[in-house]
Length: 293
Ligand code: R5P
Image 1: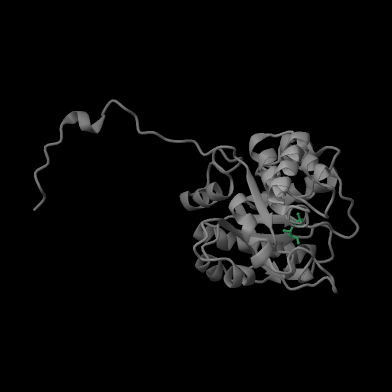
Image 2 (image 1 turned 90 degrees about the vertical axis):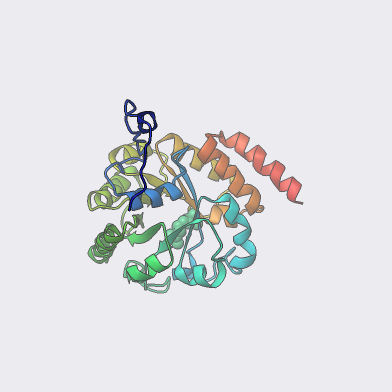
């Protein structure tokens, strides 16, 4: 028998409307709770941005420089990342299950640097992504590439499966062989993926017209770092991308191939989350680097 409950009317706050917090991430207002919750673990709800530490390169190019021993070189960087971007092989074999970091799992593969890169397939079952408690699944999309249609099919399939279980899909726009890396190309690639349902996009920064890429894309864009460049140049690229509408970085080589990776990831964080100017971020990098000596 239920207990007699004589709550006073004041405990019901009858005159106070129930609070409804707005979900601020671009284009995500209409998503379901689980999807939003996972995105909120990737994109810091205060800054609305993310520092994704990318170390999935081995899935097509083997143990590239800086990733020979992920346990030694990458795990110490994890506390400064919002998100770890990796493969399930590395997740299971090296990342401790006690980790609290959001995981973005690469779920396509099947081509190596020795062959046609765009010839990828879905390489992870949705059930395994759920089992691994991931916050998003990353799918490579080769717009203009030889296997363009197949890669778009991989993406839409994972979007459908992820939507069933509340897991967002990150579309990673890879540059097709004959396409120029310019704003026009990235407007096409990012918009196409977003229209087909990708929850956020990874692309490259271009110095001319990047703001038109982010403006035309209805969901967040993060930029890849690309090949290793000088620290100031990498910080400048990240700064410009953020100021021109990017919602963060998915950076690998420019962090783990830096002379002082721990210092570099903290400098990148300052640029992404605090709008730190590149020169100031470089000062931070240098002072942290000196302290680590
Ligand atoms: C490429 O192999 C992966 O998708 C990387 O996650 C991506 O390119 C970002 O890494 P990086 O900053 O080294 O380009």
